[in-house]
Image 1: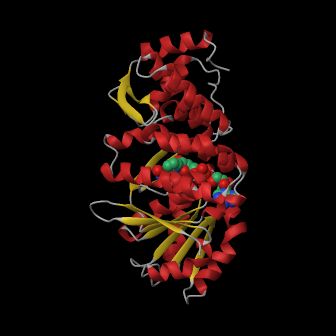
Image 2 (image 1 turned 90 degrees about the horizontal axis):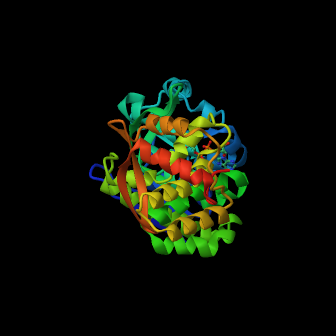
Image 3 (image 1 turned 30 degrees about the vertical axis):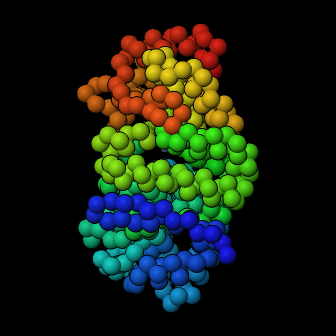
Length: 369
Ligand SMILES: NC(=O)c1ccc[n+]([C@@H]2O[C@H](COP(=O)([O-])OP(=O)(O)OC[C@H]3O[C@@H](n4cnc5c(N)ncnc54)[C@H](O)[C@@H]3O)[C@@H](O)[C@H]2O)c1
Ligand SMILES: [Zn+2]
């Protein structure tokens, strides 16, 4: 029998389970039934994912006498907009979805974020289930209840906190994922090791090449441990006040680089990979960690197939992009700094410190591209 792993996300209002099981997609109907789902089911996906998985998902659901309504979106971050959410809502209204109807988000983080948001506002909230199909979505975006869309003036500017009923992960779906997307997801996985679990970091180091080749046991272990860490952090701090900030490690610089590249040159995880190393460099510069910590992080980021090199942007531009990020408080940038592998601290950084570091690191052997 295929092993099933369960991770519980414990929250005051409603707890839910993350289920990880190879071949889960073939059992969607049974799983929905077990969840007590009746009524209408909307299965929202994008064209790429639909090509591989929609038919069999629909069949697995129909087998159990349910009548799913497929909603197929245009793939990519460009479609993560209010307009697309409006389209989802239109379909729900036309099919007379009710308060008890359920949405299934079958896809990556783009689909998951939009479905969560649509579910949170349709009739003031209907249940939804995440069925993530990218590594980023399986280890990160499907867990935690942050939903939303982009606005022309900022990424993820519009959204809500709205927890799914369940998260169902079929690691076999990663087989069809483009390699670049898999590698991008590894940045988030490495992040979990750095912020919370030194032995997981060591495990990743030992198994990186198998992970890059989708070795099933390794993938399942990595997805499970990542979900456990995210679930633990989210349970401690559902609304991102303090503890949850540690999940932003690598993202202060990462988000800035992503924005400066117009969300085209680097995919999110690639920007985060650079952020993991460069924020460790900054921590080292501030005396928060030893150089050996930076080098360990650099090594694993490179082993994953990610770059650690800062693209050439003027420091002022990077700082301004960092200030634009939501994780800013009173004009100061709040960073997450590794003290050692498995432990980080949160603290502000001043502009002059950033600029000093930037000019020093330009001439150092560890510096920029
Ligand atoms: N809510 C959160 O907490 C959170 C956390 C991290 C990221 N995000 C969001 O997630 C989004 C990024 O998610 P993503 O990296 O999953 O990108 P994505 O959803 O755009 O998916 C990446 C690409 O892979 C394709 N794809 C997905 N699954 C596939 C599969 N199994 N086989 C073949 N192709 C497949 C998609 O069609 C798309 O082209 C961003 O919008 C980001 O803001 C949200
Ligand atoms: Zn991220």
